[in-house]
Length: 355
Ligand code: IPM
Ligand code: MG
Image (cartoon, rainbow, N blue to C red):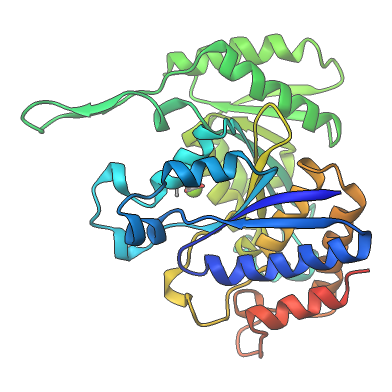
């Protein structure tokens, strides 16, 4: 297969971790007889510095004409004073909406070997954490009307959803649940928000086509508590954009392995954008110590969802699992005081286990 991949290394540690994922993709291509063409695209702070805007039309077009996008991370303190609509994060939002990527898959899993890194007590994580957060990504308060009054002293943001926007991600949630433990929890604030009440109505309609899947509802405040009280009760969490933003940070933290978790953003077709869950980590940028595993696993998700290369995706995931069980550790997951590998050494260890 010939794959055309757009690389968006972005800011901070982005370029370092994307580099390792590309080495892994190249190795997969040579083992399994595929070819890959890469286009590198500037977006985020790096684009602000070069062109004065976070995402140029050309950058979006380059991504739109590729089969899949692999993104490192965008943003950093350097651009903190940039006005709201020109911030590096705008690049991410522009890519998501410009590419129509309405469904964001954020798995939160605990690696048994790393369970000491979880801030939760042993008895809480004993039964395992394996949650898939399905976050709506191109609607809600992130993209609703916002503004200020003329005197600038009052401001508003709007959370608005149509039933169509809800239905298409609900379908993805039920389809995902069918391949897992067949349990969807819709997280909302239906005791207060009208948009949440529309979510409940629409999702319960979609549920009728999936009689094997259990659907339950949970208010977002309770869900944030349940995630630390009893995370193993969750299988698929379906939720709107901002709740998903917040809960996915919480879910990744309780696994203790934020440097390990990948994500996929998908639309109607096969094209997707894949990125680690963590940010640009400006404090360690350029030091060569970032953990590349979340990005490498994002590349695996890309092979699975955009190219239907299940065997190749599994080969990467197995190499990572093996490396972790053999004690391969970057700084973020090493025991305090233990030595650790650099970003590229960690990449080497995963490459070595790719067969
Ligand atoms: C995320 C990030 C982004 C978001 C930011 C950088 C705009 O927090 O992907 O979770 O809020 O969606
Ligand atoms: Mg976030």
